[in-house]
Length: 209
Image (cartoon, rainbow, N blue to C red; front, side):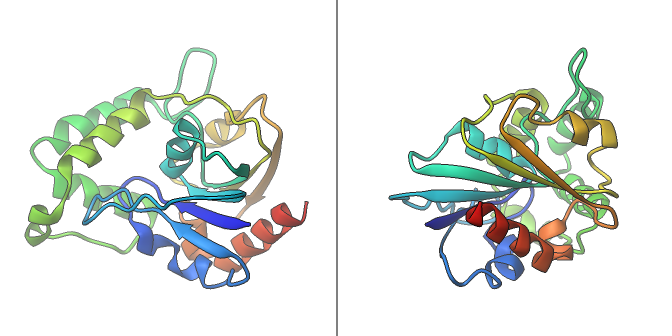
């Protein structure tokens, strides 16, 4: 069994360091979308469990590995914005980010990290290393995409104090999938950083099941 880690929008492979360190008994395949450097799409052979964060869940759903046996979606979702009859983040939130991103990608990234509860900040000196095309394109995917539900079990972990996903949006996710839910009341949108031990325990339970 291999663990495939897929990060969310505005992050990179280093996001997983605290959690991955707690799971040494399995091989790791840690992807990197390449927002801030070279992308990395690990080669996968045999069975794997996807451990995803936020938009990373949508990325995995859009290209399911052949050996996928399950998904642990941390602060995850298969659709981010609201649709008629389905709760989600208002589309206008993404529209504002997209309009501003064209002229101020650093400002959009910094506001996003601050809203998530992340301490990471970017300066104008980082602008040359940003893959603005990938970041902008994935904002569009966050606004519009709705990958199909997986045919494998999903364990959905959420924070009860998530500033990005309102309660109705958290409750609406993955309706119709083979699903288990855990919500940590004191946690926000960065569960793998805030509570890596709890996430590791949930992943071990998913593998055991």
